[in-house]
Image (tube, rainbow, N blue to C red; front, top):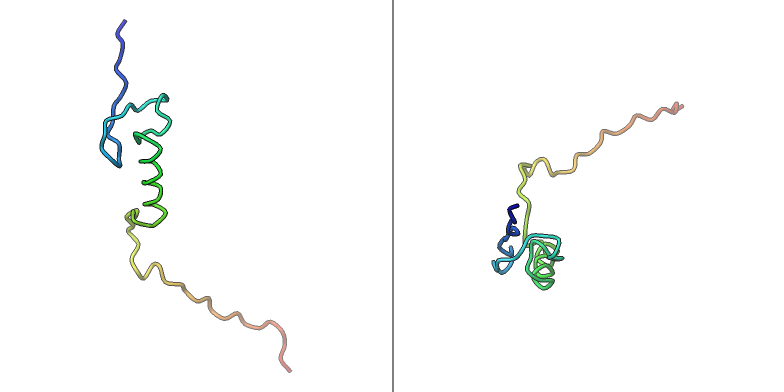
Length: 73
């Protein structure tokens, strides 16, 4: 029977090689510190997810005025 080595990945924050398994509670990070630093970067909006929306797609469109259904006499 062949024993497989655990998958090792680079920590996204500090690039240290870490085990990517249930034994690592911070995976894919190497430590809680690196995980929290990364979370802080997202919270401060330093990371952005690319979008295909153009600026015109982000403008608020006004709704047409509704006609008053009450009779005006």
